[in-house]
Length: 385
Image 1: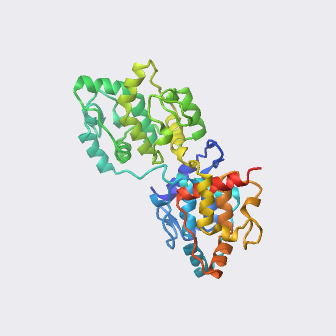
Image 2: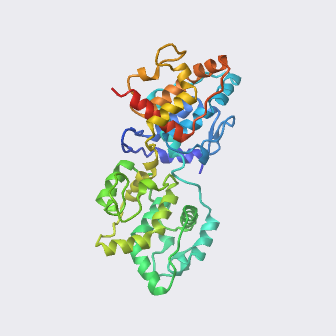
Image 3: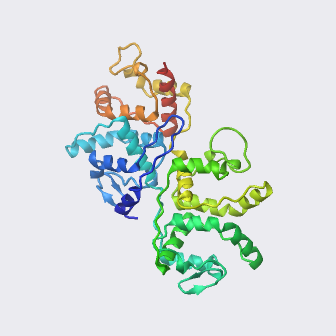
């Protein structure tokens, strides 16, 4: 998907949910503006748009929670600083809100997933036996809805919602017809959607917004999803604990997981007398957006390990509590209220830190995501008033 197309979709601004301590950005489009205004785009491309001096940030390598992204950026700081000097560019300073918006934008990039292929979609409809019941391109069965009459510009989210709502009826019809329930990957859904959109002869148009996680959080309760699945807390549920499952995938990948588990979910609902939830408008998009953003907030770290890391990584050599170090005493910071605050301070002072390490003939310390979580947990505890 072209970057400009992504931006048009992002214009459907949505208010994001609040996690335990992390205030998520209200509009990922703001992060794209910061990405350009701070000249990140001059070195980093996104989906082919932007510079090539640095890595393309739409790659999976640069996708993760706040502190996962932070560890990647921190570990590449010396290389970035060298590039700033070569290009005679000033290292941009970021406020807490700007850093939050930027990270929210980078996290969101993979939400829409990869583009589909019409030829693959056509073949999938045949191999998955969809055309046994549905007409598409003028060919196929008439038992199910006619795909040729689907609205123009139907997005994957629109198709997925239609599949979900017709799931119970489809499953019953497949049983009576002897057709095996088809499992689909996220890419399969993207491919099928592209082909259906091209083959459609419908006269009406439909747009589906990318989704509002805050609304999705409420729908997760009102649609009784939380009767079987938990996303927080320790109460045992019948279905998988979604907070323990890797759901930071594109929208079609999350949707395919829901589709593939459809028969199991329907069986469990019937067994427990739970009504199958029908989704309208943008409700499917909202729920998937909520599930997608579950991974934006980091898991808790270990303060004790964080304290040890500050010693072993050499941070305490400069950030000494006796105020005799070459850098500020970190425990004197008023309070670390979120990991974004820590990351912002690290980013804004990275040049001074590198200069100091060079003068002391010391190497730049590397931190993986887990170590970042532990360091943050220690600093949060140490600065708690």
